[in-house]
Structures are given as C-alpha cells and as structure tokens.
Image (cartoon, rainbow, N blue to C red):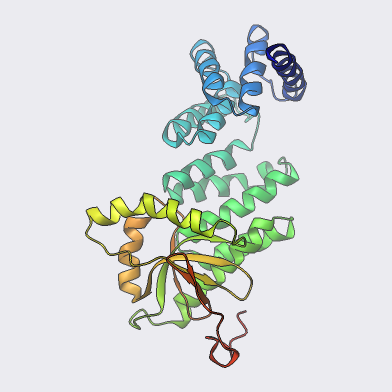
Length: 313
C-alpha cells in the first residue's frame, strides 16, 4: 500500500508540474521541483507538508511573485487569513515593483482574504481594482464569475445592498449558482431596509446561515451555536432559541434573536459577526418558521401564511 501511495503521489506531482508550467513565471529552475511538490501536497489537502516547503521557498526566494502568491493562497485555505494577507501583499508589491502583475487574479484572492478578516471596505477596493478593464479582461471566465460574486458579497456585508445586487446579477449571468442564493439574501435585506421601520418590534432576526439543503440543518445550527455562545455570554446577551425559517424560494435561514426589534437584532449582530462574519439582520415577515431549536413545526395553514399577499419579488 505504501508503494502504491508513493506511485500515486509521483503521478500527481508530474501532473502538478505540467499544470504549473504556465504560471512558473519567476520560479527559479532549481526550485521548480520543490514548488511542484508543495502544490501537489496542497492538492491532496496535506497542508502542513505544503506549508513547510513553501515557508522554506519563501525564505530562500523572497522576490518570487509566484512562490509568494501560491503560498498566500495556501495560507488562506488553511484559514490563516492574517498571515495570508501579509504574504499576498508582499507578492503584489513584488509584481507592482516590476511594472506588471504576472497573475491578475491575485486581486480577487486578496479581496477574499479581507472579507474573511472582516475588512469589507479593503476587500471592495481590491475587487474594484480587479474589475478595471485592463485587469478584468485578462481573467479567466471562472475567475470573472468569482470576482463578481465576491464583490457582491463584500458590498452586501458593507450594507451597500443595491450595488451588491448588481454584482450578484452579473455573477448569475456568468453562471454562478451561489449568486442565485445571494440575490435572495440581498432582496431580503433591501426589504428590511426600505419597507420596514426600525422601530417596529418583533419582526427581525440575526441570520447566521442560509442553505437550500435541510439535511444538515441541526448539525450546522449546533456548530454555529458552539462558536457564538461564548461571545454572547461574555456580553451577557440572550441568543434565544435558534429558529430556522423557510423562504418561498426554498432557502432555509438559521436565525437567532427571532422576533426582535431592529435595534436589538443589530446589537446582537455586532457580537455574532466576531465569529460569523457573514451574519446579517433581516425581516422575517415573508418567511415561514420551519423548526425551533431543532424541533420541526407543523406546516402552516394556507389561510394563515405570513406574507401571503406579497409576491416575494
């Protein structure tokens, strides 16, 4: 088995070498084998082995854009976002110092990392830079799609909903399935912002997750509660029982502080975003309660469906 595993790794390594030939713009010849090995380990999700190689390469070849960029991407996959941001910034500085960025997708990657760090304005700036024609036109179609979706996501988290909707719509046109779900979120946020008075009590909640799959709702809810509860307890905030709502689109929304005033939900949001950075406050008037604290609720009667006269558009 060990011999077979070694053979498989060698095959993967050879494939990685071939795949990386186009991007090894400034990887020294003597470092090519190590670089390919680091990428092969990364592709196998053996992140620690990959990081060990990349750390050595980064020290030995500090002026290589490609090594720094790929190392920064690895760190992002490992969720070491602060360190990733630092390494990616160094890669960008190297490329800009030469007057040309070897791989313009770095702006999208840096923007994503800043989203994960909660630096939404910085993320938006990175995405806007990547959207400039001289850079955007060089991006692969899949990267353009991710860029539009990421830009919309950052704008949504920065409470710039109309701009966010425009970006998600473009991402949808490029084929992004995630954009379809994100459009649902933004429309809910726009409704909350424009059609509901913040002074009205009892119709708001903090959304901590959304999905179209109901299979793992309980597991996801429990995992998120374990992350959020310590922060809320420290601030003496009551989370209440987690409530899952079902939208007409088929999207499930896991929420906290259901039936809160807008002000109370916003106050809790500040705490929740410390551990779930894409949480948001939404009106629940057009959603139906699906389950409370993991217990399913009976389906509503047709005559009592909330928001029955609203077309949800």
